[in-house]
Length: 199
Image (cartoon, rainbow, N blue to C red; front, side, top):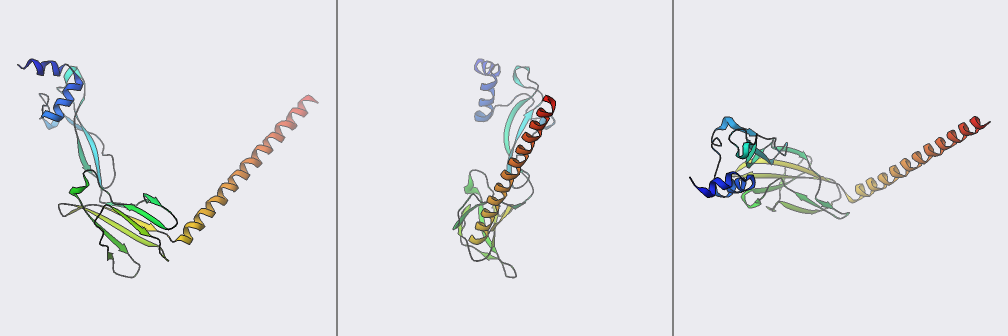
């Protein structure tokens, strides 16, 4: 027996480190029936999940971490939110995980009643200027020529963004006025009750 390995088995942190770096595994780690797969961190595209061992863990632990691995959700991620936007431009992102150089990204502009227009950008980030009409952008993420994720964005015009901002401002004012009115009404009711009880 390896004395260093025996010492490592008694130390959970050392065991995990040795498992991930040197490929060491517990006595039952090779048996798939002892493995418990955690939930995927995403419902679409590419995520990660924990793989736990339910038997043969060091230190008589009921469960221990074996590895963290990639998992996949459905391909279509629906409509996304821009990474960053101003009144003039918008920054969009594809769906991916590190390292991103193993993926191929394809950006497309979807125009109503017209053929989709493929964009020359092959990066996972796309920055576009706002146009005179709303435009839909789509990013397809490929791994080994297989589509693994798809996400769409709608980029509104500058006028629409200004209108949405002003509408949000009006909503905030309306909420503030409503809350203030309710507070004043409650104070008046409490004051009248207090006067009635003192009468």
